[in-house]
Length: 152
Image (cartoon, rainbow, N blue to C red; front, top):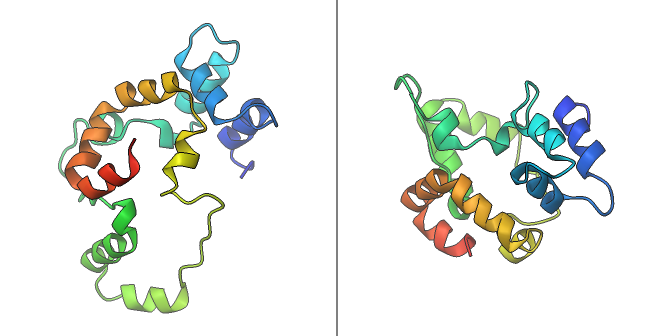
């Protein structure tokens, strides 16, 4: 994980025992926080953590329509992924499944919203809502059941 420069930076500033996700988001949203510059570098710098960039405004804005976009929902992830893969690579999907069975295990389930949201303050959750409003609208549109199930 720490081989990538942004991962190493994240762990350096926000990976200590008493410093974690909330402190990262607080530093990112608060210009007077002593770690604001580090949070910005990790999020927006040349070796950034691209998962923090708003999908609607960064990846989908000003699209030329040259790429096919698929939306995969958490609550139907396996089926959505399989259907998208079949559309894109119809002859290789079954072969790959045989060679590479699903074996990823996470310590915290993506569906365990009480654990995930409990890591953040009310202010940070409100900031997420404002910053990612267009992305949240995408989720509501393409994954309405998942939105109702996972978002507080």
